[in-house]
Image (cartoon, rainbow, N blue to C red; front, side, top):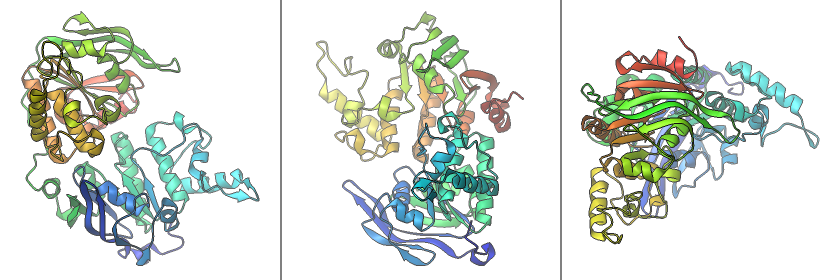
Length: 512
């Protein structure tokens, strides 16, 4: 994959160097004179809180964003990268967190799209198949080339994304949160591939919020805080606690501190729940479980196995067949009725379900309760003074940055927008909290705080249903864990019995 170069001859030489990269936006200095190096033959992890500037920096490297100043060198030579095509020509590939695939196209069509080999004016699919097949054998990947991508599980879709980059001769591979949609076993397979890839003399930039993965995979770690490089450390010489301290600027408790649960009455009862998709196929097929006051029940599983449909049915957003009861009373599919009963919902997609992007912070913080006291008086008029005071309290408590109640939601980084949603839902004092991906895209310091608040809600008698693609989050927060696969519950375990291996097998549909 190095075009004939000897891996040992180039190992340790600088593959990519950034010098004083600066990028300003109207309200924030995203990158402030950032300099870093990644070497041939290594995995460099880039970590930092949400909004630290990691994504902006990688978009600059890949040509999606232009810096205000600074210099990029590839293999020691100055490089002008103003669009992805120029980055690809320099051997830089990027696997985005949200896959850039055309769902109806086959695996083969997606891999060669935009770089198709030609015979005259015609696309040479025979040659394309041969080239992709040879690349798959080299990488030890096995993909059905004639299958539409939309029919593949997410773990295989990610391999298609990697093949797209390497088909274009990428020698420097950027991966943005690559394990967010993988089972533990799939993540291990990805890491094994990346180690083989760098052993051949290539370079990897690995972006992840999961510090355990950073320690496991990387050779060095560059930490970014508030748009600046805090430092670069050799991975064997650091720890998760040290990296967290560098990221946040203070000591961070990485483990969830909670006592044993004291479950009481059943708050949520789901029995034989079935939900159909637009294609008339079952998205949920006979799901049954209970959640009691004073306990956290976690739902583990690779995204796309019915978790979204389950959450939407429980919160009144989707019609269903079967039975859902709150406190012994049947629920009709009505989001307002659910909220008035005492259900809080942290949605997995904050932009689609959690926020009105053109509304201000204070307006978003009353969504769903805007017509009720204390936000509205007897005649329904909004109480501006109380709404402002409540908004200021939540913004301060959840460390929303910038500290503004007037800013439109679309102006916030993803993590700060998530804090607005989480703050609103937890501040209601719910009887049932349905938390879907509650810390997605959130700083490590804020994750600590959100976890503390979820445990506090449990200890105050709230029933909590936690749905998360982060297996560590599910294991550390939950009192009981259910695993979903293809719309069914594969099994249930107490948190102390839930090993990563067993959960991973169930998440892949394997009953051990």
